[in-house]
Image (cartoon, rainbow, N blue to C red):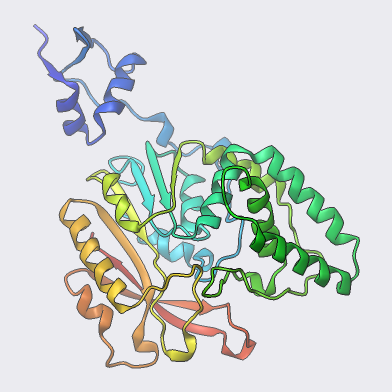
Length: 356
């Protein structure tokens, strides 16, 4: 006589969601299942099906994606180190991924190029950035048409005319309010400005106006068509938010890996960077984030966090060492690439803090 367990019991046994168990049953992936009313019954000796969605495969890796904007503090150069510090079980027992400060999304895109998670959540306080993600996800074709137009118009101009063109687009971007009717225009301008502004920065003044001057590029790639098309495909099942990072608590559970890449604590007064948004992230905010990190850790969530290392300028400054004393703190080498003066760019150490 076959002994059965409920979908909830199977979910707990296999460390996946109850919804995923129901999907496996409906797809006949679990032998000898039965139904009682609207409830699935699973044989107690049934083994967890191999999730084909989590397998790496050649076709999937051929559509690798990378960030569509340059972002101060981006993690492209640190991907090898970050991936060496991922939790065990990623893609098997860990089926959900979240980035509450997604920024350029270097790690996000790297993981989406290798795994298909059951659920993915990204958030950023920068509404213009999340709007660009959203338009790529839902209106990719029209976005590409606009970017191709910018590319063609920009390339025909000499350097002086390109400067004027840039400032016209910057004024247009700053004067258009972000709403459902303007989302496409705002996203296209956002990407254009990122590709043509000085050093690829995104910075706003206290009034929330984008104020980065024009860069000097001969042939910037404004319309990266193949990458944007592939990003659009991978974002279809990604949840997008632009709100307070605490919102991720509604998403995160014991099957979730969360990567925090918050605004870094300035190493000194002169390194303080005018914010990506009109809001600042001070020491009180860093302390609050550490409390939330511990809260998620206590829930069984796997958590990794990056931040600056105060020891670069003051070896006695143990701000983060004290905040995260109970966790694994690693110091890794990074190159500070975004600075107005080339001689100020160079190697520094950064912190990686994980609870696993």
